[in-house]
Length: 449
Image 1: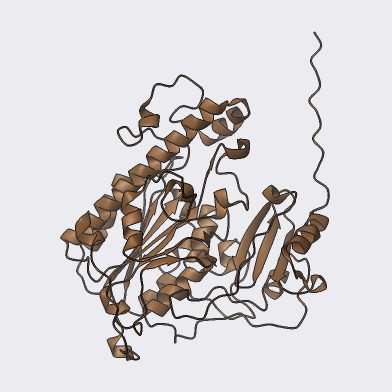
Image 2 (image 1 turned 60 degrees about the vertical axis):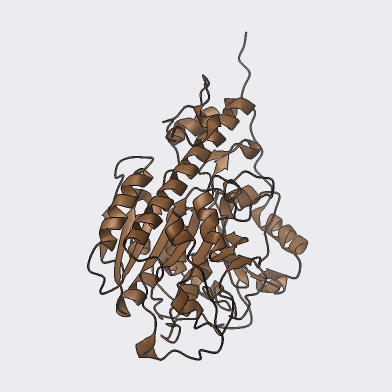
């Protein structure tokens, strides 16, 4: 694995602007990790946590790792679509696209127009949505009809076949791994705890619905077993990532390959009694890996700025598409930026009103070193935070009550009457008032003896 992972990133100063005809067109690999908790990697989780991803950790040392990256949604398909530049309307299945009739061009379509060949390999049909696949010429769907999806080694084989095509035009290949999602496989020889004898209800191959049904009866050993199964799948995906990078190195694609690895969402492994792919705005779900390794030709053009190391500022996957376009010198393409329609933004909205509620923020911005720093992102916490899904943007958020379907736009730093708040406690109190009291649980009737 070392051939690709140890390629140095050199920075030189003063190369100036790159003319359009000289813009780099490297092959691009985008790896989407479905259900990989950050705390099982070495990329910004607890410092005392064990990492099961040595390949990904090494890749991060050779590039940029964003240790405080948030997924924009707790659903894999929507989160990936937004990372790939889909509009919020398209990604969430609402009518219309863009704002005030202005189209938002997704990443794959933009790259195809600029001369790349686009293709995708998806390990789970759940992410094969129209919003995710906009602009991809060739799509290989694996794991159709399989709740867990295709295993990572099958995905690697298909991805390498796509790179084996003629080198011109250069390929942009999206690779989606879905192993760390129920029903969980049992990979042997990777995590000792997963190989240990176990006779409880949390077994490999347990369907998601059955896992959720049994979880209230789980004890500490059962939750530890679930975490071990997920860890073994995270480790298996990391091994597959190494196989993919090794295969590309053998094809002499190492030095000029632009590599992006992102997580679409995390996963519950038993903390707070929650398991599986339940939504939430907690870090367990929304804190995701994000690593960029730029080829040397691009790093030399970045005015001497280092393109490696940890980036500690809060970012979101909404920033990924503008960042890639910035790295490829494609930012002069007239990329759409949402504009403010007026001083006030409605405090609540639904349907078509969403477009107006998004006024005043952009769908994301470049987060490469040297780009203007995005505003600080605030974490939203309420007494019913588990009932909220959030789409975070630069300076704002779209919040959805998962119980009622009600939606709310928030501009961070704006007065409450304009849909914002001046402090996090004020925002939490305001959201609690909007959500109302948590519904009381009706106790189950006692059985007569």
